[in-house]
Image 1 (cartoon, helix red, strand yellow):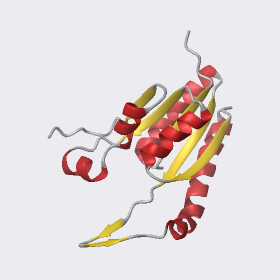
Image 2 (cartoon, one colour):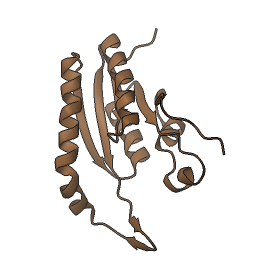
Image 3 (cartoon, one colour):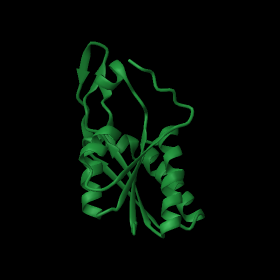
Image 4 (cartoon, one colour):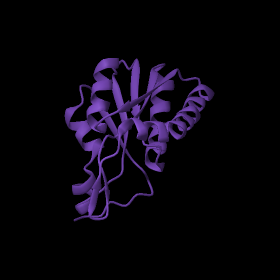
Length: 154
């Protein structure tokens, strides 16, 4: 028998990840599981044209904190409205590493993550957080494709 007591739901607040939230909430309701909502502030350099600018992470955190907290509040309200216990985690670092570390730390039974479906040069530049999470995860991962998204074959 499958037992799911806790679920980790990484989000970047995009329409893709908001669609995946419906799956995470459905599983959480069905199994009576706690939902961990994770947002990772990446500590990557910004590439602006031909120049690379390194951003001081504390300043970046301060500038985005209000936005992130506002979005997290909306997600927590959705959880509460559906009777799902949740906890939010805002982390800093490489997204897939932080997601996997959070899954281990919280001993989650399932990760529900959206996929953006990037291919070609976009995949090479941005990578695939979902793909890396699937490969390295300590638990099962459900990757969710947004129905409006078309995958383009290379």
